[in-house]
Amino acid sequence: MSIRIWLSAAGVDSLDAPQEGRADILKVGDANLRVDTENGCKYVTLNGDPNDPSTAIPAIERKFIRKVTYVEKYYRGFRTDGLYRHKGATARVETREHHHSFEDVTIESHQNISISAGSIRTLKEIYSKVRAGELKPESDWAISQAAIDRREFEAKQAAEPQTEH
Image 1 (tube, helix red, strand yellow):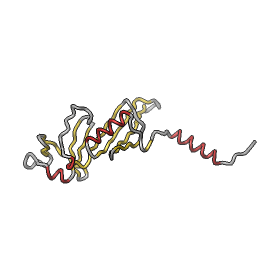
Image 2 (cartoon, helix red, strand yellow):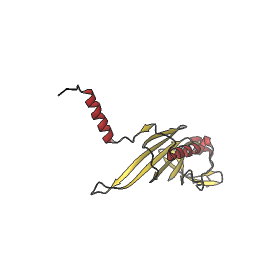
Image 3 (cartoon, helix red, strand yellow):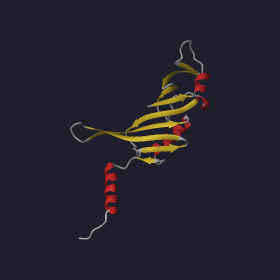
Image 4 (cartoon, helix red, strand yellow):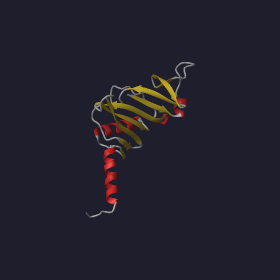
């Protein structure tokens, strides 16, 4: 579980480096945070669940945050696979199954959830709503291939002229 707070250019420029020559450490309030870079964008990584009150989340002014992202894997309380949206935030839920290499027996199933939001508050809201089943997916990926094949077969049958025997 990791939360990434992606910093805006203004956010990076306004924060002070606590030690000379340490561009990877920025001072945010009373905390010194390690800043990483991906594709030229700077972010702070926090380990923990955003809804866990024991997770330490530094106070960063909203104007300094470009986006907040979160990725987690869970094993119970599955939701419908697909894309969920809430207040500008997007969550992607996808079920994964691991099979034994010699048999088609499911050993483990889990779901991955990946969220991108404009603020920590919105990230917490969409995460809670998806996990509680309060949101329905905008794009539903839960239809199995067998169901799609059956629908296509039925549509093809309905389109063909019926002959009487």
